[in-house]
Amino acid sequence: MATEKKVTAIKNTPKHLLGIQNLSVLEAKEILTEAKSFIKLNRGSSKKIDVLRGKTQINLFFEPSTRTQSSFDLAGKRLGADVMTMNMGNSALKKGETLIDTAMTLNAMHPDIIVIRHQDSGAPNLLSQKVNCTVINAGDGRREHPTQALLDALTIINRKGNIEGLKIAICGDILHSRVARSNIYLMNMLGAEVNVIAPKTLMPKGIDNLGVKSFTDMKKGLDGCDIVMMLRLQNERMQGSFLPSKREYYEFFGLTPEKLKFAKKDALLMHPGPMNRGVEIDTKLADDINVSLVKEQVELGVAVRMACLKLYCK
Ligand code: CP
Image 1 (tube, rainbow, N blue to C red):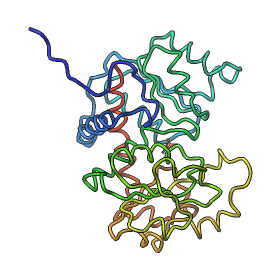
Image 2: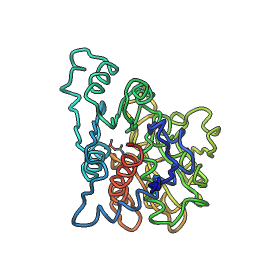
Image 3: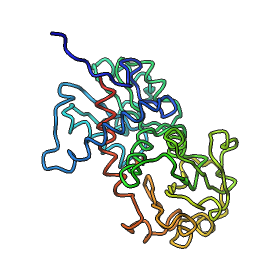
Image 4: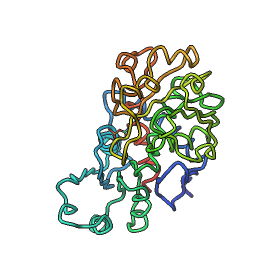
C-alpha cells in the first residue's frame, strides 16, 4: 500500500529560511499554523517530542543574543534534536578563521540544521551556498530577522484573531532594524496596513517603496493603529551621530501612556527586546499586562522556532 505523503508549501529544496522576502504567503501561513500546535505542548508538563530525533542542530551566534539563541536551543531540544550551541567568542575565528572555513569545518561533521546570527547582511545566504544542510537565519546585519517577524505575527493572531485589516505601527530606529524589515514584509503579506515612525535621521530612504506609510510624528503615525511595535536604538550599527540626545529621543519618540492614546483604545504594545527602558519605552508601560505583549512574544518565539526547525529540516 502506498504511504500518503503530506503536501506542504515548504518544499524539499531550497530548504533554507533566509528571510521573509523569500517566503510565499502559503509558506508563512504553514509555519504559523504549525507553530500554533506547539503553544499547547510548551505549556504542558511534558514538552518533548521526537520529530527531530537523530538530527543534529548547530547554533552559530556571531552576535549577542538572549531570546533567539535560547529559544532555538530549547526548540531543537524539545523536538528531540541533538543541539550544539557554539561559543563563538572561543572559536577558531579568534585565530583568523573565516566564516566560510568555519562553515566548511562544521559541514564536514554532517549537521542537519545550522542556525546563524551574523553582523553582516547576507551571511546566512552565503553560508547556505557552502553547506549541505538547512540554514536558518537568526538575524543578519540590518537585513532580516525572519523568525522574529513570524513570532510577532503569531502573537498578534493569538490576541487579535487575525492580521488582515489591522493597522500596525513600527516605531523607532527603522534604518538599522532587521526586525522592522522582516515585519514590514510579513505584515504586508498577511494583509495589514503598516505605518513606520522614526526621526528623519533613522528613516531609510525609499522606505515608502516597501508598501508602508512613513511618519516623523508619533501622533500622526499612531492614529488608528491596533498594534504599536517599538524598536531599540541599534547603537552597535550606528556610525556617527544620529540623534541629539537620548533624552530628546524619548521626548519625541519614546512610547509613554500619553502617546499610546494616539493609537486605538484597545491598541497593544510589542517590543522584540532587548528593551532600553526610558529610551524608546516607558518602563511601567513595558510591564503593563493590559497592553504589553512582550512576554507573550518571548513565549511564542519557542513555538515558532520549533515550527521552523520541524518544517525546514527534511
Ligand atoms: N529579539 C531578539 O532578537 O532578541 P535577542 O537579541 O535577545 O535574540
